[in-house]
Length: 546
Image (cartoon, rainbow, N blue to C red; front, top):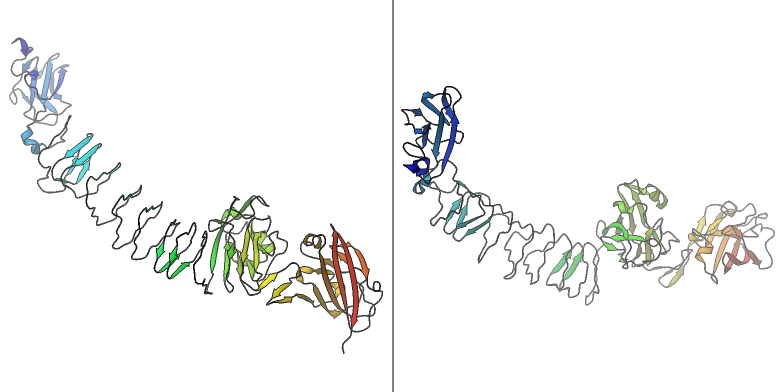
């Protein structure tokens, strides 16, 4: 009995089963002792000073963790309880609590809930292997789960890592298949019988053929190397290298189309439409080498629908809007000019809106930064110049130009144009007299006709919006005519250019008096000899009606 360790009856070491042990030393007379690990009634032994007590006769252990002695322990007595946690592997289904396995769990049969699918099975180890059919509602594995047979899940399957299918022939989903990191198809292609393919973000790359028997709807950027379409191609924007793009019917674009080259087409058709032909969303970026005026003027420039300051071909009869709501446009209001250098503003068919209020270019610029909705519109007419420049009101060479497809050619100040092979020159008709309208702005025309009879002498000033000295180069010459209603005491003996006196030569000498009847026609031939240096050859003739 040397190996009994002083125990009378069954000693705790007699079995290899897992046990829980707790010992107390009585302080005073004590009847009840609490077993903190819990026990199963009938599976606990109690010892008093090393002697095993008899259940029911010597103590009560009916559950709840409390052991009650029939005879109280005296002060200093030692009470020890041993609870046995053993179980029978053949009766696992009779276990009412948690089932914990310290090592591996191998199941050669099926894991089946007797009542069918629905019970939660939780495995907190590193891996799980299922060789046969598995019916599970919830499975939680922190490592790798391998299913050699069929797995039936009545609830959701959430995978935080990688889901690997080995030799899977088909994936049949009654709902959506969501792939956060993308879908790679290495062979066989993608066939969509109905419902369409919806890629909400990211890049979809197809290295093989795309066979779309229905519509192909792409809202974002599409980079296509070779497209062959038997019907119409319709897109908001075409951009990039369009080599190999072919369609036996038509290509329709409601946005910007960018092609390295476009050839082999029969015609280019543009209807008038009932609304805006195009709305360009404008932003301002730092210029790159793609900008027409890179290295000239301002260091920043416009983008239109993401394309850096393109040259645009417009259609007569249509309206185009340049929308500048983006904050990068602040202080960069778009205005149309006859020159890239912004010498002469063009106003024909051009309107400006700040928060829906139609205004002039100067007022538009003043209200621009404070407005939340701001845009420039141009209605292209037959009389629109063939080329116009969209540039910033305040800064040079930020934009590019547009072609208006018109029959009007702008040739400089005075609005001189070629119309159907004829030279047409604008005349500025003034409902007043010359002496009260001395600023002769050549941007309004080269001939100025004054309807009201003159009554005083005057010195007209020849000028333009940006200055005659600015628009003329050395060696340039131009002719200006002023028609006035004659008066005996009214005449113009001198002129100024840009507000400065010039050298004048008059045919027969400068006029010293007026004519009493008819109309006087003053003609000035102006030649720029040097910077701000001009020679003027003047002449005046009196005409009377017959």
